[in-house]
Length: 258
Length: 308
Image: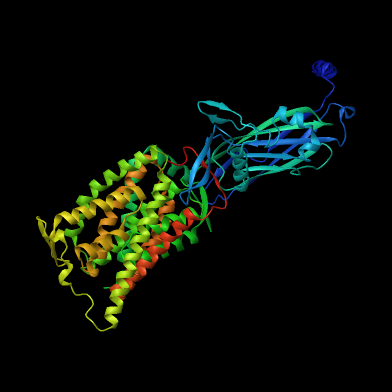
């Protein structure tokens, strides 16, 4: 037993020696991996927490860590439309189709992004909303359009609905190596699986990376209604119509005055 | 108290939705209209997707008009022969309307057509009703008999064949204009997503000369049949009927409709028509305002697949 343990230590030591200059590892998890939507659901706040770990204290660059956590929701195509005046009335005259942009995007950082790493790195690693690709359908091609007012409008409207967020001080370090961040999900976030990508920066360079995920699901009665509506549309419709007539009849009996 | 709507995918305040159901139910019971043209914009305003709002409102309107129809039936204030004749035309009208709806959607101009239809129809109908009811009120103030059938009121279509006697309404007219009215209501209803009661009531009063007393109950019979079928169709085709939302709305709606029906019987016909005219006109102007005034935000987003 002792021999095995000793061998393990030697092995671990050899690994540590062979590792690159950055010896830190990033460990992160979420307070909840399954967000259940029940009838009293009004949005939820998840906590992302994690720590920076090194083999020896000498490896640790005390106090100079930065975290960039990106939460990406399920992807769904959408259309941005612009109105203009035609014969005195405002009509949607132009539109752009965005192919599978994230329906939820939160970029949580410990400091403003520009202070964490260079603009070049942000672009390369697609950090922040501005550098997140939002491909558009152009004729029959799919591509990025730079300086597009439709893209700007999409980001602005999604921010207004609380679905796109960039929070420069959302990640707080409780100790030099232990951090936490709150992910707030508004009530109308889409159902589906969410990815959380966490990147550790030090002195402007990426030194470690990890990811996690969570899922927003409907359960119980809500799930039952959704399944019934989707899989048995006609029966669901008939049942709803019967419910309507029954409610009408009950009311007329209850309120009978003659 | 917040409750999460499973199909609409948003939480809403139960009491707010209940109050909306009550208010719209009261109006619908009073005037014999479905109230869809009031409820749908209200739901969109509190954040329900337009498609879910339209689909769920049909269920609410079915319940509300059914309880109203029973209330009128007890007072013997509905004409079932007239309702069935209208329904006969209505079925064909709906089919035609759905065909046009599909065609317009393919052209990507459905929203505009719906907006313009609301403005035109509501404004014109509202103004006509206000003008007529004000004339009637002035006449009765001057002490002249109000509701007499004027000698010149026999329009050309009163000479058409296929005459039917609608006993309860005390009218004897050709079935052709009645079927045509049913067709028009079905057609417009399918395009605008409304029961069409606010159009049917004035058409029956002014064109067929059905007395105000039976017109409301009759309109409610037609409304609940068309709206109950629309609920099934919406649920079967685009799966957007939110039963939870519809239930909250209809509980408020049926209670409101009962009080509305009682209130409606106490108010004189011409005043009732004046109030309905004002209501219809104001909703029409609200839609016109939206089309004419420069919107705060020229841009809007729409998830593809979430809405038809």
